[in-house]
Amino acid sequence: MSRALDLTGQTFHRLTVIERAGSAPNNGGARWRCLCECGNETYARAGDLRMGAHRSCGCLREQKLAEARTYTRVRRSSGESARAEMRRNLTQAGVHPDALAWARRAW
Figure 1 (cartoon, rainbow, N blue to C red):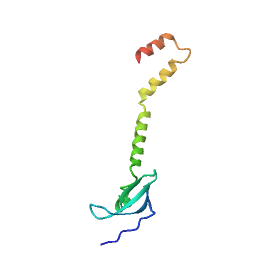
Figure 2 (tube, helix red, strand yellow; figure 1 turned 45 degrees about the vertical axis):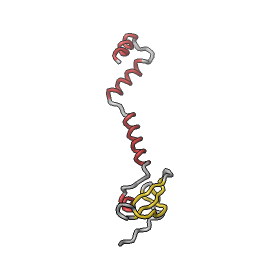
Figure 3 (cartoon, rainbow, N blue to C red; figure 1 turned 90 degrees about the vertical axis):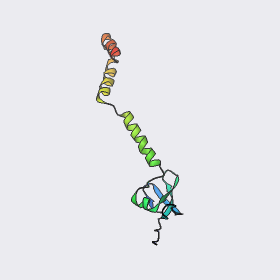
Figure 4 (cartoon, rainbow, N blue to C red; figure 1 turned 120 degrees about the horizontal axis):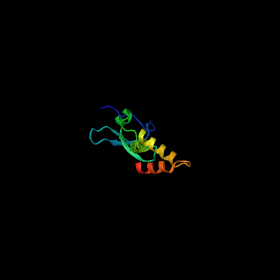
């Protein structure tokens, strides 16, 4: 049987290893208690930490999802941008009233 490496104090992505937490129930591999950068604690297998399969307590996934939602909300098609620009131009002083009425009916 091979001896487990001591990972105490090492950092893997957002996780810092605190101490060994026994053996994993499914294969008997070493489990480690880790502290995430966000302050939460989680448990991970040594192999998952070293290979990068376990990078955070779950906060990284939530952050990436939030960024993706923000990106798609901000992004506009070229047609939407053109319509928004036309609305800005039509609401400025000096626009012919008929043009403004037409624009309101069109949208």
